[in-house]
Image (cartoon, rainbow, N blue to C red; front, side, top):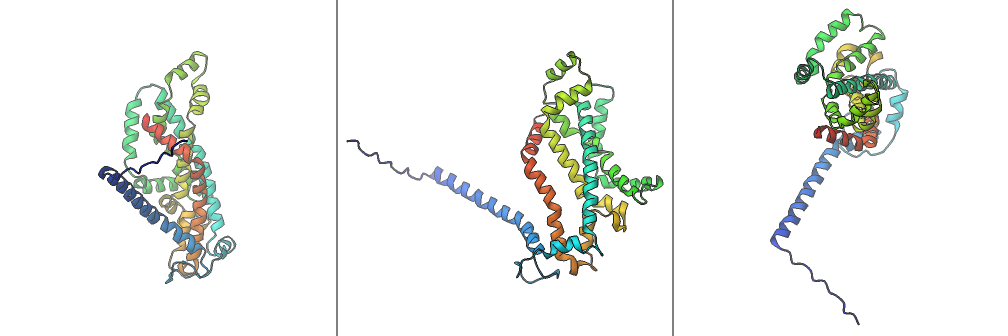
Length: 296
């Protein structure tokens, strides 16, 4: 007859008690930080579902939930045309994403794999220029585009695409760092097999660098999607060419805020949905891309 083995409870030592206490404290702090971070998002969502349209209320939770604000946002377009703003932003962001991703990846490959005269000085200049905020050149860019006739009519779209994508190749450092982690023996073997530089880039480097490609696509898309300063300067008061950032800003103007405040919250939720979907789907590739760049 087997004897039952009785497990004795391990006594709580001072070191174990300290470890448990510190772990609990860390989790409590992280929980509080998460609540603080999520509170504004929760407040915007609740405001977008509020039936009353006033900007100020004495309560947090809506007395009645409704989706009327979302419906009115897309149907009442006489004063502020949100659907057109959304389509303008989506069109510009997609075009800029394609151009910027191409520029960044091509420049990164050249800096990582090719050796040519003035390579290091160019990299140093690009790093120094990146230390200055882009809006310092805002006035100069505006007058250059005005002299070229690119701020009138539908040419505004061309101007915004040029602004967001023309200098994107200078931000090659992260992608270059990832390309540096790809073994050079692979590219050398491809060259010996008869591949030219474009074939090496397209058939060898890019398939092995999917994380940084995804990261570059995400950052290239978010730039024009979130920008306000350059778009405000170029477009000005012409609401036909407004993007969502300008539209959301104008919804909070004195003449619109009382009637548009809850619709502003609904617009903020809608604008965040494409970004949230992209990051949820691409999160693993996004983190891997940053890790690979740090290793390089």
